[in-house]
Length: 469
Image 1: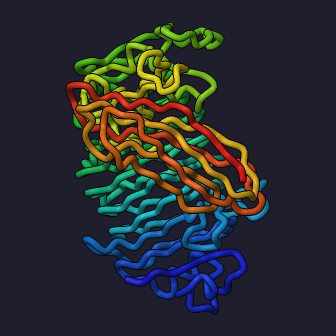
Image 2 (image 1 turned 135 degrees about the vertical axis):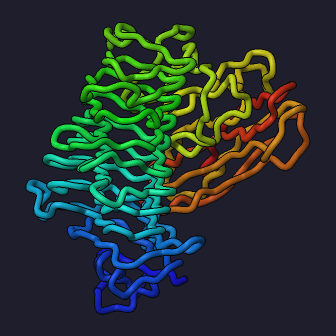
């Protein structure tokens, strides 16, 4: 159970046990060799290699690779951590960026940008139980295969395999459950809070040259936009819950009940074999006019110019769509509301944010939020001593961690100030700090962590102020 370090400027001849003695490559760290329980912090930079997982983690002691984008464990500055299959950012040199061979278990990857392999971003060889891929972005992957390839040729077990909070852009396919020679049943494969944009096939589950089919995967609170969903002649235990399936096509081999959905918004035409569930909404016209403006109070389902078609308009009916087995948090890691009727479908939770004219501190306008929610403001700064403050008021039935002000500066650990005073009164949260040289702005997050389900529990923020010494 050792912390190890990889970063630009290191050497694979180093021990890798400190940042000063970091390895140069991920492969160099893997070949140390790593053992169950090890954590490998990878500093910002571009890594042009294929990492092959050579050993197993174990229950309670996975082998974890972390792309340290904020730099808190590596260079203190932070930045993008890229693993690429290209040597020149123009052509695909290697077929795979990360390879998890058959029967490798308890491996975790988080915080990486994976791009440019000619076949796979992450290749899973089969029987890869209890592996986790989280908070990763995939782009320009792959020429003719998938960002995450799930091989089900002969050893289909993926018990406890989770892909969560990942973003897929312009990939041939996002997920590919491929090459089943006969029917294959997965045990517990979950896709949670993921977003796919402009992928040729967001989901590719046993078709084309495959003679069998794949069952047993579940997708929850996802957003699939564009592309062609492909399914083989599968049995009835593939499920999609609380998700958007928009502006794409659909293909399948003959058969029935290969897919079940529940509480989904579906903007494609499914052939026979789709089993619609409770709460599904099918609409082939609502997104036809993408020039529609966002008007407060309008029922248009998505808002612009947020992440393309991913964040719900808080005034839309879909933002209050009761869910079915929702995830506990959304794409950004923000907790879902405690009240089920306020849980929205899709990868990003809709958040109530309204102007408040009654509960105000100085006779102006405050901002009101209900349930768990957060608001971000970008404030310009320089390398001078800076004080940021805001007033917060939480109503009497508020429950859970008290409201917070979180200041985020690129390359630095978040600064959190929590309301420590009584409810039903205005309390000031304040923080004084000196930004690092070169910082041009900080992000100020105003956070409600409410978990109450009934009563008076709104949170109000007023008089956000910045003072530079």
